[in-house]
Length: 83
Image (cartoon, rainbow, N blue to C red):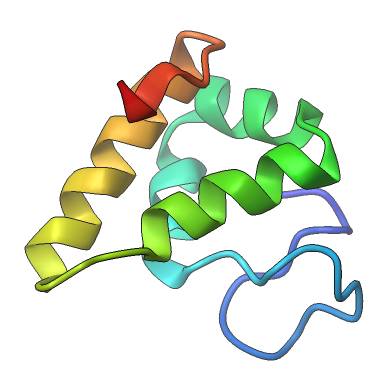
């Protein structure tokens, strides 16, 4: 992660970007291509990715599935995970 990315809750001094969820941070650490592409995103794009992962999850499995989908998309230098 770059110095601007914070994993966990309440650590990011930049109020424009939410903290990276722990599960997403762990998944990115295992996938260098996805990690590199995520680091290249704008602040708005990063916030959108994080919001997508955190929104409308009824179970932990819902969140894990979103994380897997997003990481696969990021590995392909794409943000088409919402389709």
